[in-house]
Length: 305
Image (tube, rainbow, N blue to C red):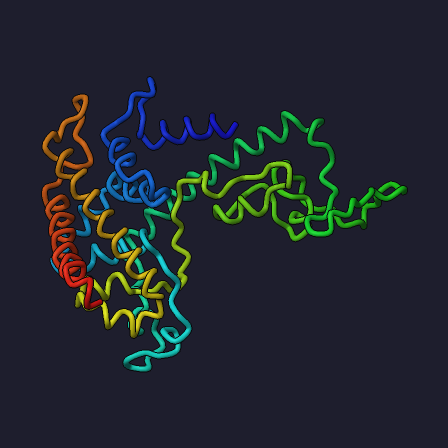
């Protein structure tokens, strides 16, 4: 059923057509395959026209696009010091030193809507599997941590007895708190199903904005390009800084190259592609070029860093 879910997801998101022929967006996703699920998130934003709306905003800056990329790639949690210290003492995370600004609502909403579709689809497959193989799965009466098996009472239940919601995929233990077979997030789905229905969270191609404070080290480097300042203020270890910035550079370069190549043919199988907007392609090219200048300056002076 996991394989069936994957095929159904690719079809519903128009990554492949009904004959399983890949669309233009499939090649883009494969171009940065090692960054799953963030590669799917970029594709979702492209398909939803989010980048077009972002780039056409009269107040748009390349930095705005960089904020989105920093939320998707090379993420690192904000350090406790960043959460406590702010330049103005305002207590607002979006203005704190070393904390990444929040995603624009337009972007966050698109990612949440995509996540809801994925979770709903996977939950439906899990429920169908649990019902079809109910006999083989047996009664869900084992506590999750102690693994103690709880036998049903010998007497017949009375009208006053507490009765949890009837569930098929949800863990019966979790259902005691009033949760049914409706799952609110990918995390809820992966942790709330019965033990026999183990779901690998890496199987779900979702990036869920959860409001958690993220480190702004990549964005800060994009602004000033000073490695020594990052080493002093970011709270990220120097080897990790170097590795992540190099990885981020390669990601931007790969996305830029993929967009340029596909933008040359704005029609794919007779349909306008997600890469037809020249402003979006130009914005990604500008962002990649600016980051490359700063990063290559650091790499060229490697002996001094």
